[in-house]
Length: 219
Image (cartoon, rainbow, N blue to C red; front, side, top):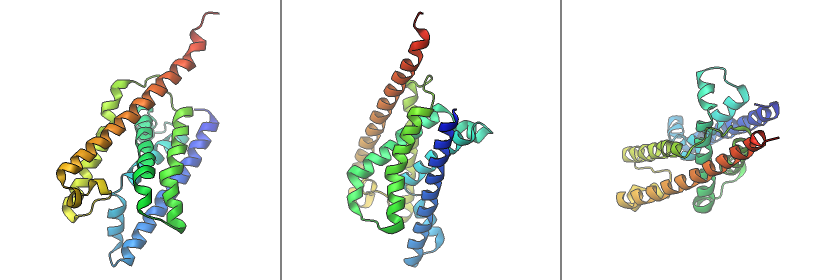
């Protein structure tokens, strides 16, 4: 990977890890202010798809900055993992801005964390994916496997909610929506994931063909 891409990946990774750390501190601060302990803040923090996806994105960016130095960086440096992360973070940004942003109005450091995790990181990672991630091996058949992540999160969120009655997003709130409507909501969101994945794979394959074209043209 060219040095300029490694520098971009490192800068974006630092920003992502900083925002994640800040959000963790803010979550702990909120739960302690509400009379709960620090562990409640960590538990709440790890319930959000936004947080988990930004951790995934930060890992991919860190792997891109460091290069293949071990099993972990080799895994997160894989183009298919980076592409799955791109699908996930794009969905985070779009759904938050279309459906969730108007539900609250953060200020101060919370606003910084909110904008960074939902707006800045999706754009930064999409740029990284477009310019730095190889796409010659990108294929339509990879898309179903990518859906295992949002499906696993759906099951995880419902299991957590069954334990303590708290659901991180309104469209997953079984107590308010009921299981049938929540499943319908989840299927609709999953279809959106698949749509984003199809667009990314289509663009990636087009980019790979375009990059290979000069080398295959006769002289």
